[in-house]
Length: 371
Figure 1 (cartoon, one colour):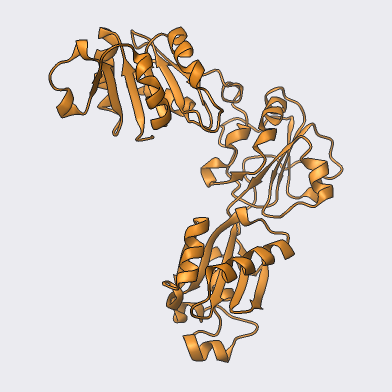
Figure 2: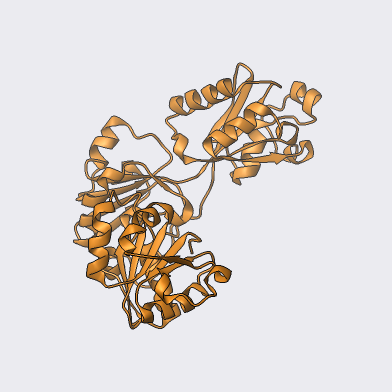
């Protein structure tokens, strides 16, 4: 639950319910007119305002991730209409009627989390959640949130709307999952018959479909993109681990260049990197720390003893002499990823040594992989 929620009430009944509600929403802030002041507002962190709610709404709209209104739906629609930008940046907006019987998801149901918030509020108030998003109502795949619980990154957002239409209209939808977590289908009912699942683009090539959801760590070829992304969305699961070693004092620029050039050569997507992995001697290396921070990659570090538990085909006595480990990038990548084999064995470039491993995941379960 977001801790940046604004709750707004403008009627006596609404204020009473809102005061009770915020007790169940840690971090939320309540706003209501000063004519309903009860002298405990400062102590409880409640904000009083005078005049129309229209005067404070623009500030709330940009400051908070979610807005909860005890105001009529029509009034809220008119209030927020001039402030709307797009579904990627607009906050979640939820409306609750003056008797607390209906909780209505109004805006940013998926990306903004309004649908989830609506269910939570309805549970607290013992009210009825009103959600009109087609994929939620039909209990099918929400294209804009597919894999979001695993941190998958949606690369071509502009295709979400037509692909979503294909899903909810029960057109032929093809899911191509080459990597990433398998547990994305959480419904108790089987995957709808109009959705096929395959494990590679080669397997999918001859299939007939109207829309595609492609989950891969690879950079697609022009032919693959033309075939599957004309009406398809591309997701980047966080499945690549970069094992990395470097000479002391290696600059961020050199480290970054080696990573980007290597990924381009191997047709791998930077957006699918989960983390870096290296020896503990390098945990404070300025260039590596800067690389980790720039891309928001965590950095797993291992002792020389831990690295030496991994069998290597080409152990290095030179590396051992300086670090106490027979290798850094390869065993670090394998230990961090849990993989048994490397996607990319060590590559030496200037002051940098790099390896890449693919995080293994179990086969798909609970969904049909179509023959």
